[in-house]
Length: 95
Length: 496
Image (cartoon, rainbow over all chains, first blue to last red; front, side, top):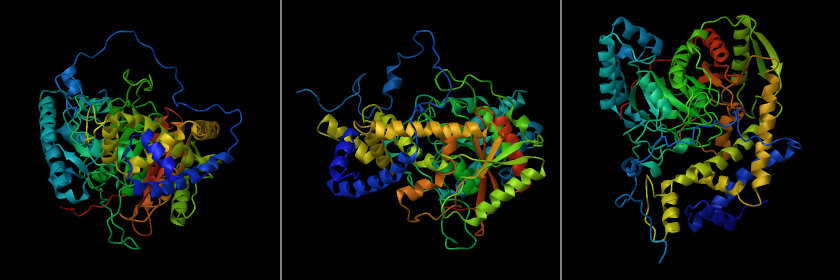
């Protein structure tokens, strides 16, 4: 399996990271090197093995369905790059 | 006097504060001065001397009134810049979080504050905790106070390990009495080994992850970095505890960890896993490992050979699981709600420019790997496969612990290396080959400084215990520390 520049372009868009065109080829080589090294996992017999999703041998705790915080717009917006009144802002999405 | 105050352990400082030999303000000022004298090490992203002096004054006033907040009252420490600190910039050493001032305190930071700890500053780290050398920080490299006495790296600036490299260098250079670290695949234990200090990663779930910038949520754990095992036990006691705000925080009691330090290890069964060797690992590390086993045997422990057959698959498993979780966790940095924002004509362009400029090379690499292994068509082949191998690795440990109480291994396959050493990403990842397996299984581990390399650099040995059996871990680690008799040298100040 070889990871090519087109695939890098595709996953970079999925991850919403701008990668300049001249970086695609070198990045493809690097990532392909890492994935090639990871391929050795194919040697491990995992038939009938359950995937491990958590190390905590717990069932998730429950709590009463009650409001425990919130109603603090100033704190929520304190670090926003470009807030307007009580809102976050983004470039225009709908014409 | 001021110089002497930085040579104390946390336990000694606690006694001195109790007896009134010195005040927390004096202790704190001595450490602030040590930080200023060592600016060239670049241990902090943000220094907080005013906050420190105020907290120290409060601790002294409290003591004058006959009250003590807790186990760390008046003790100056460094806080890894991954912990959100109320009103103090928290960057995760990333451009994308530059200027971010949380409006809340992490639970572990809050616990330490409640115990009276005095925060000196936010320590440097690899960006988003992704790295093993503290050379991926947007705020520059941290330098190890140690220098090689001989060999090809003699006289060069060395890395302190990573990702908690600023914390490790601060503790080793006596800029802080202790420091918080976080460990996802070895980020506390490996830098501890590189700087000659004690680094402890508790059982997953022992410390709350709430308010710690997330890297890989199924692996991340906070832990203490100190100069002695006793200090490690004291500091962990002040950090740990169940927290309803983190659903993976374990609802268990926090025992008196310090009580285990100095207890006999007679009859303790110590496992030596035969698979913990790496290609190119120097013989001196193997010999130190054998020496460590002999020291424990001399104190009455039984040394038992064990096998952890899937060890070699731990690192590739980690490099699927951790990037996959990171790609999901780091999706939140979108330039909208906090942190850095770059210009873009459209929403997608703004996202892509923000993340392209805001994330460094290693973070981008891992987010891309993560996005790839989670993408349609590859999810089962990579991600689910890795989760299954992870089950195998955890099973290996379960079986080994049916026969032994603790495991003894090297911490890292090499001593500290030079800043700028040529390494491929995979070669850099191999630094964590001995620490990642316990992380995948969620087990507590500790690195204890045990000896020096031929070039005069510190080498650590790692011990690993059963889940939530930190008491046995501290007991065994203290015995190892006692036998090793490792002494941290006095370093010349490294001014700017």
